[in-house]
Length: 354
Image (cartoon, rainbow, N blue to C red; front, side):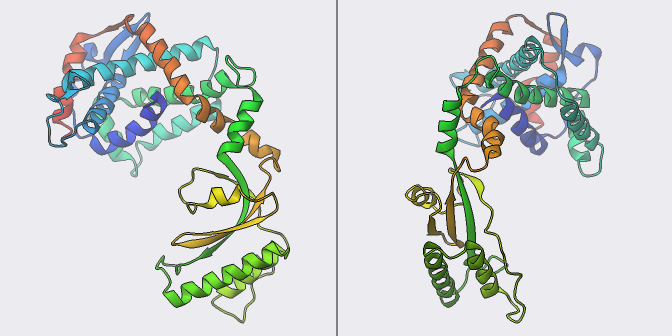
């Protein structure tokens, strides 16, 4: 799992798993380690412990087994959790150092969003989560640092692989991935269920399927997609005496991810068989889709807007390896406060999160 994903997803697990872990608040326990002249708050390590504990539990073949005494990847669980927590700390430091080496800064908007998140921990809606952080020895300032670390990864990633970055990706490679992963379509969705989500009976389902066949035939014969869509709205209107406003423009084309599981299973394969401007019709249990194929470069801003996502698809694993390599390089230079390590032991953390 990537460090960024661990940061973003881990706190969801933390929110569910956290109860109350002892925190004495003694000054010699507030700092878990030092790196050069920098002090690393224990809250960073505690977060890594909770995340590692959850990872360890997910690796157990028997969910009832003792996570602390069961071997994980050839290491006893309690030791594995500590090792992984220290790796998290190393990666946290590595991200900060890489960010500084690239002379990057978080934007005012990024910092404002993080500030808003921290402030929300004291609201009624998020108070339970905020309290759980504090009870576990994670000060809001430590949580803020974790969020900032996540944003640093988000900032570095496109900078590293962008046009003028450290290892820029050729535009040809970006476009090849864009064309592989995305399609541009205008779609009309014909529901096979009522507004509550209950599937139509066979009679009503057949009526909608017949209507869809007719709409598709009209579309392939060159009739306006806008007119066809307006007729569908009229067909499904509850008040047949009130005509929906007739549409003069076709449904707008938009990008879809080819891996989208919401689409009918054969949607992409069928779409790839037709030319730009042609239509397909596909069906799944809940609906029928009539779609008009568009050129993915029809709107230049679509490619520009998806560039970061494309870079992530191509390079996220590689970038995670770069962070890990940097973390391995500096891990021996991190000096741990053994007293804090003992206080926030795997045994104590696990006992409070059964």
